[in-house]
Length: 447
Ligand SMILES: Cc1cc2nc3c(=O)[nH]c(=O)nc-3n(C[C@H](O)[C@@H](O)[C@H](O)COP(=O)(O)OP(=O)(O)OC[C@H]3O[C@@H](n4cnc5c(N)ncnc54)[C@H](O)[C@@H]3O)c2cc1C
View 1 (cartoon, rainbow, N blue to C red):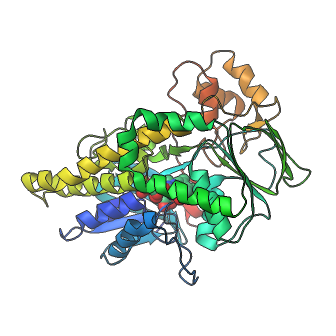
View 2 (view 1 turned 180 degrees about the horizontal axis):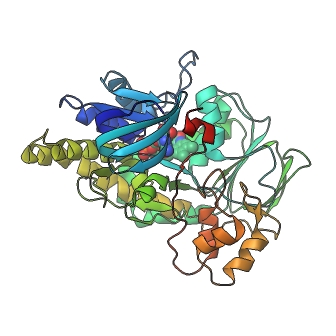
View 3 (view 1 turned 180 degrees about the vertical axis):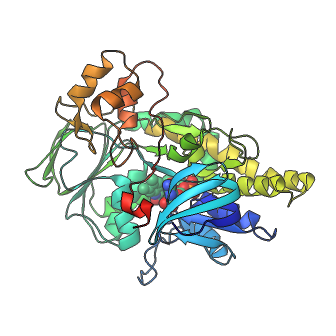
């Protein structure tokens, strides 16, 4: 292993939260490293194409303007950018990374985890067929490579983000076979009518949804409400979706039932987490300076709850101010003054996030599974095997040991929420273990 790199602050995640923290920390004479498994900064929402790509009007919409400005400010900072490096292990003051040259150890006086969120993986009969993706996976291809992964793409689930993704596919030259919301239109509107003030304050996002709908209407894309997915069929590739209202021909499907925080690293660190929104998962608990329950470790962005990019950036800025204050680079009264605005923004956006959670609530809309449907696809564990263990009253960890559910390459990131939905009693979930990302033993040994 190469010699350890040492910094004052190590930030995990180059998305809106990590960038905002770095911007706040710059100018205080601190050495800062930002680690991300993506080659370039941007996070999920501003996923960058490779430098050599030339993409006209790349994410030019109004809702991306502030993110482009933040990205430009971040790129101008004197920080050490460790792109293409995955964090495999985390302990207070220390990270273990894996990158193009093998394993690298990083020490830092303060660590900020701003690892974002991921699509909620939703098993459905036929979901292991080639051509079936998470909606965010489809979007990642469209954003970062300008590739539409099929000739007729179907989006289905409960989350409004699928409208934006469908629009991006249409603008990328693709054909969308349909956008299906499992919940009714009235169920989607009801939370907005209950809290119109919160909805009004995030008018930009609502307008983005309306603009997406208009584009889809012009392109002749059917957008349907109250239509759930039942199964996906095909011989060696997905060819049709069976819905509660008939069959739809397609050769790519994006499942969009919501997003869950990336909680592996905070859990590995022993930081306190609590159940996240209705989609499931765990969010990291923090205090008014974004400090976690572990000394020296901060958290920001969607690791602390899925609330959108603006909330992520506000939380990141607050964490940056908090770390500078902790390290004695910013006087407490100056920190209080600087923190006032991001705290207000964060509170406002979290109120909207609660609204969005209610609009997109996937509970009650998850497809029914067949006994042989794989729930843990890394280790090929079918639904029936899990039902048998759940019936014994075993905990998630005990079921993991008995069935290998959660022991594969994804380390439970995909199957844990499905298993926890099956276990009726409160359960702390899988113990998060090294390595957070797949790595070969040879790379760890430095061969
Ligand atoms: C696939 C996907 C697509 C999305 N698209 C949109 C969209 O179009 N519009 C929208 O409003 N919201 C979108 N979201 C929600 C979105 O994530 C944001 O609101 C915003 O990007 C959150 O910012 P963040 O800084 O908290 O996290 P992110 O932007 O997700 O940044 C976190 C970064 O941490 C890195 N990371 C995580 N774990 C590790 C690790 N172990 N080692 C190294 N690096 C790590 C990731 O590579 C990522 O770049 C999307 C979410 C997902 C999962």
